Image (tube, rainbow, N blue to C red; front, side, top):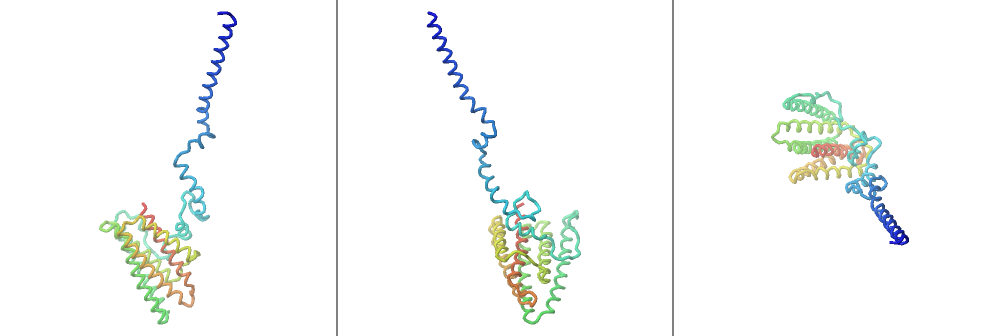
Length: 275
């Protein structure tokens, strides 16, 4: 082979080698860029992140109120209403602290004694209010009290019915009776107040009621409907009585305050059933 031919052949081999190296570099370069944060996130997002994260960023902040005690959870509309006031007893009565008792029997007995204290106070307040009414007012109050008793018994039978036959059933029954009785004492004393409009609190009541229905069995859902109808009868009768008093003629304010109390009750029930 002559020198010109050899040089031409060598040059051809060099050109082919350079071309091969460029092809190899163009293939491997994208592999290096996959590890960078600028390329990996948009190219290969997690399926859960692409679906779940955007709604959280756009929907949760409006639900967090400035008074919310925790920013880690996004409360629904009903929860934000409940946080405006404590869910503890609305009346100040001297009762036992049952939380530290060691046995279920002692817990049951303690709850029963606390309910008895509330029941006694309710009877005292009821008689005191009744004596200050005219004949029409007495009739309205009597009707409201009768409907409240129907609601109380139905609501507490419903709540304790989940534990029927269990050792905890008496505790649930007595605790429910105590809380609803304390709320009735507050209603008779006209200390139930709210800054939420009737339209808003009624919408929130519907939301939490539907949420409880969603986790209830078919039979429990039917019973809950009966309880809710009994509560509506009581609320309307009580506010008919209260709005005819000279000192409290605002029917909507009464309806809103009593409705908010029911929102709290159902919210607590929803949380218990969701555990």
